[in-house]
Image (cartoon, rainbow, N blue to C red; front, side, top):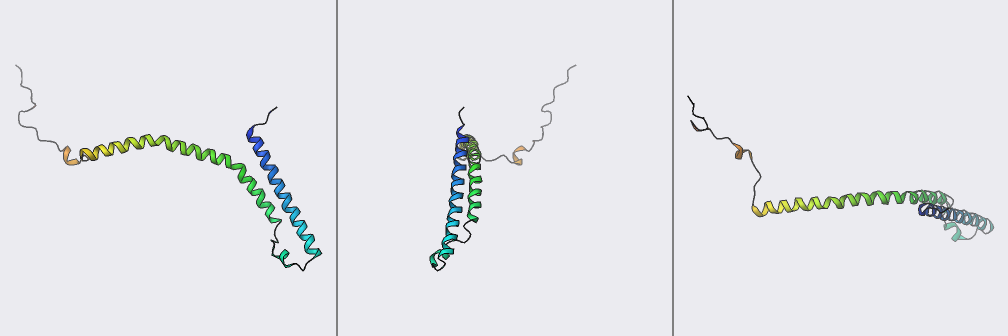
Length: 128
């Protein structure tokens, strides 16, 4: 039974996240031991005192990394949709260029005024 690439990727991320968390905890424990053994070392005091708090940041990073494929996929679909709209934009651009070249003006209400019919025009003669 083969695993999907997504599950392998997820498993790899989980393993890396766990290893980083364990490394941070181990480093914190080692620093505590060194501080208790030789508290006179000034350099050790400069190290972050909240090293254990970094483990939760690593776990949060893991969660963000888990969601990245979905975010990238959504962004890709959005960009693809935008690229399909380019052909419509090109058509509109060509139409606007043609209007500018031909110096066509937009229709106004003045061009639609109705003319008064001339007397007798458009009236059919009566048949007897």
